[in-house]
Image 1 (cartoon, rainbow, N blue to C red):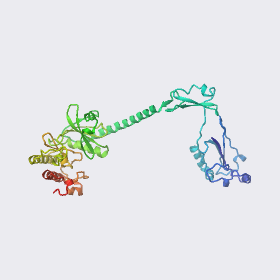
Image 2 (cartoon, rainbow, N blue to C red; image 1 turned 180 degrees about the vertical axis):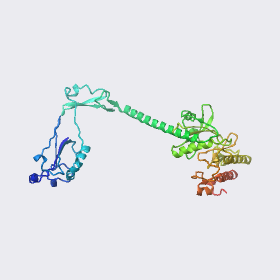
Image 3 (cartoon, rainbow, N blue to C red; image 1 turned 90 degrees about the horizontal axis):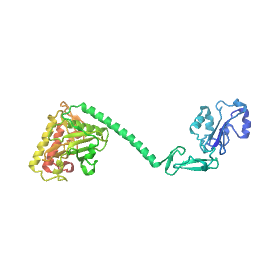
Image 4 (cartoon, rainbow, N blue to C red; image 1 turned 90 degrees about the vertical axis):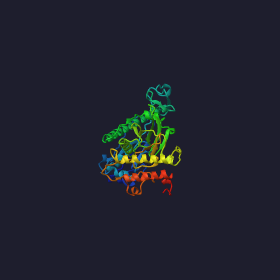
Length: 429
């Protein structure tokens, strides 16, 4: 700890005297940041100092000083932490820049001990319970500190707490904070969805599931339960408490786009009453990301069977191919002409045609479908179909309509006939 005095005299009457003594003339104040004795001086203070009072005097009681520098400063400061700027600081005293700098930047380090009647650790009773005592001969007293592995205020009762306990407490507080934030976000998400749902007419109702039901149904989203993956979602096979086998579709990330896609899928599917469309059974908004519950379709996709992939079989005779094509065509016709509101799926492909126990066709994946008015001939939208199934005109204009559906279905028919995949085969047609 040091005592610092900053004072510059600007009286012409005292100039010669001060110049001879090399103390105080402004042009003698160095420009470096050291308190060297000209304009600023410092000295150490003795250890064990219990009180401090500073007074600054001047010749003629400051009657003959320049107005730009009327003040001097004396203060305690931590050694090597003054930050004196030399002449530039002195010149700017009128703007109080130095005073402001001192007020905000000067540190004082108080060196203290417990003294009084209890002078050393042998007489101390405070440093107990996870604490230890240290004598200070210079200051004639003692200090308490927390034992290794403990942290806190050693001068308070039970003030030293185990670091593990502190970490667990902090972790608990952080966990509670994020839990509340997460719950608030899900409540807002639920209100938004309900508002959106209530603004639309739907043809049937679905079940709203709670958080605890779905993870239990699929062994807490075990990879062994995974039956399908898309660009934005994972599909699991699960068993509900009533023993129903279901497909649980969980989006892999949350965000405005995914929420809109989730809401869109629910609104679209609830307007469809058709035996050749995978039925939506319910949804859950309490999860961190939206979750949909569908009826489970056991015999995989048409793509698997056409291209003999894992899960495919040899049942696909010409008769069965024709039947599946007719069922898919009838379903698309229903979506165009007989649904409450016309629907454009925008993702018609063999991988989105599922096959049930009797190998009947079931259209799925309506997440990027579009509801549109009968008056609308085209729907302007970002192209989202799988490449190879999307008509060339739509790729250039971003406009989708029933004709786009027909083109995509034509690609599926070509797959059924040729057993080839347009996406991976340049000689498809």
